[in-house]
Amino acid sequence: MVMMWDLQGSSQPRQQFSGHTMVVTGLAVSPDTSQLCTGSRDNTLLLWDVGTGQRAERASVSRNLVTHLCWVPREPYILQTSEDKTIRLWDSRGLQVAHVFPAKQHIQTYCEVSEDGHKCISCSSGFGGEGCEATLWDLRQTRNRICEYKGHFQTVACCVFLPRALALMPVIATSSHDCKVKIWNQESGACLFTLSLDGSGPLTSLAVADTVSLLCASFSRGIRLLRVDHSRGLELQEVAGF
Image 1 (cartoon, one colour):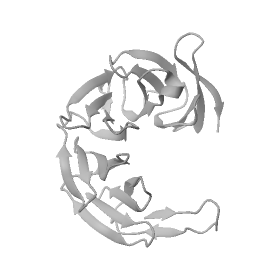
Image 2: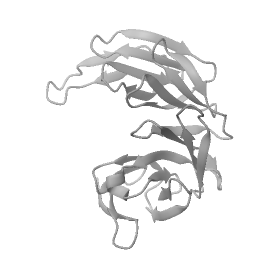
Image 3: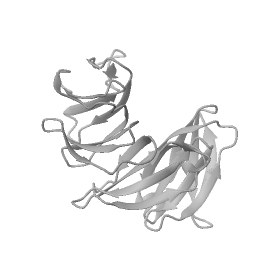
């Protein structure tokens, strides 16, 4: 089940979306906030009307165990990663598969779309440096693979585009079960900086907090606040925890 709250209203959920038969593992809200797409380990995607809470569309693909969903800005498309090692682009108008990217060698754990909607990144599971990578894809007509980012030694759980105001150049950041956050040059694939959060356990997600910081969630040490420092190039520093 997915529940939606009004942050300024009652402590009770404003809307509930119930329809999957197994755990919900991904959700994405449309750019105009009128629709919600949810994905599950039951191999299905469901499209909902946010206002009424009613299901509008249902799609099912065999072995499509959803790991993450992301709506493409200003477009009717939804990007989805899966345990079947596949990345799919869905057209929300009828909830049909619009494109399937070439299958990778490992489970795809997460995906994100750039702010301009032209590129996307996905990341993969792995161990001992095998897999453990992020991949940059072209979302425009060619939809080719652009670059890979290799250097983690365990599953890469999250990958995000960093805004130009934060990084001053096109870069992405990744977090991994190897307790490390890495910043990469988006165009060359070079690793620009590695921050080790020792004792944190696997790092599960990343999010841009503001123009100078990131939030990183961990298994053992809660959420860590990371500050971007440009005094000696591009570096990350852990400044607080929750």
